[in-house]
Amino acid sequence: GGIWTTPLVGQEIVTMGKLRLNRNAASREVDQTTYQLMYARYSMFANIRESYFEIIALQKRVDILNYLTDIADRSVEQTKKLLDAKQVARLDLVQLEVEAEKLRADLEATLREFDPAYKSLAAAIGLNNIDRARLAGDLEAPLPDYDLDRTQAYLLEVHPEVIAAQIGVDKARILLRRAQVEPYPNPTVMAGYTRQNQNISSDYDLGVSLPIPLWNRNQGNIQSARAMVGEATQQIGMVQNDLTGRLGVAFRNFASARRLAERYRTAILPRAKEAFDLSMKAYQGGQFEYLRVLTAERMLAQANLEYVTALKNAWQAASVISGLALEDEWPPKPVAAPPAPAERP
Image (cartoon, rainbow, N blue to C red; front, side, top):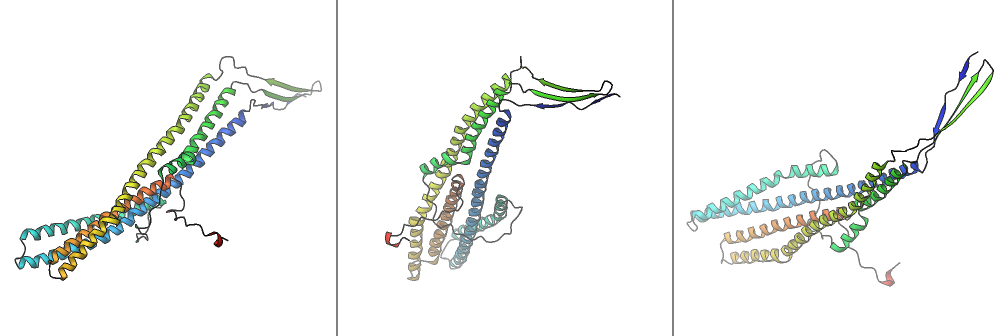
């Protein structure tokens, strides 16, 4: 005897494509994250390149400062001899000794910059530490040739941050539609079974429930989602303006440093080298004292030091541009001229 009852089983039927809208919104979020990851990759490349050229410039700077320190020491020794011979004043010696100490202090300060520079490079790569060794590379390699207008047009069209912002608008519109269909009720279908053994009968339970949203029609969430669409649309312009500003600063630094380096390479360094050669010839001919030769040599080395700084600034600015322009292989190889028609395969 008695009554046997099975559990009442129910199934909610989701209407108006709510599940599809949820999936589409989640898919857009995955796409956004993918493009953000892509930009993080190129940002990492740019940081590595900047740290690399910082160390390359430090290496070159140490070489030049060692050379300058040697020149200064030779100048001091030569001046001491001239002072003993009463051919120069004590003031000349003191001034040269001060300059030698300044160069030595500059060299020591530059050497202390290596550890932070290597730690920055390791952090950019994603390591806790890297072995300190002399890096291969040449600051005087041909600099990449960037065109501001073309690079800007490329950035505003295909940059991952711009595409992620555009996808954000699609996601916001999907979420708005999702909020708009939320008030449409989802019916629930139920079924069960009861066995009554006293009168030997089987009862089947079937039911349908349907909530009716009389007062809560999701008005607040709809207004919030509509505002998110406007915010996401504005975000595209904000991202484009930010990219334009960052590119403008990097291109300004690149163009000015490149121009300065070019001036040193074509005008300043050749004249400093000529002054040194002329003073050496005059010294060998007995017209100049050796101190004037050392002064010309020191002037040449100082010009090289400033040339290295200009090249470093140009390469680091180019590194920033390379990250914005999504360049994998960098520096880009110069495009060779196409072969003559008869030589083409």
